[in-house]
Length: 79
Image 1 (spheres, rainbow, N blue to C red):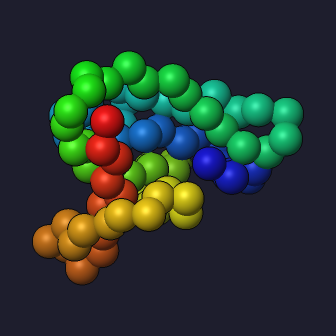
Image 2: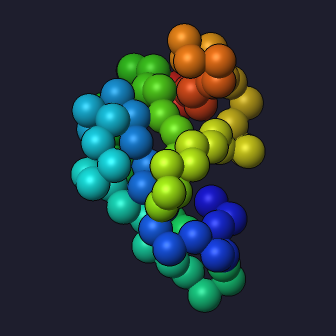
């Protein structure tokens, strides 16, 4: 995730109970952030990124999204 000016970014989704504290992303020297998450195969997971201040955003590289019921979308990841 490209977030060079964000103080904190987490990946939230149905795999971690949508908890902003469960999966914080670590800043990298190139301005991106990353985290490794091990997920079981054969499932579809819904997720978003949450930046400090409550700003949600989707994965720009994700091919599939679905409406989330709040006028926005969730990114989908199929394992």
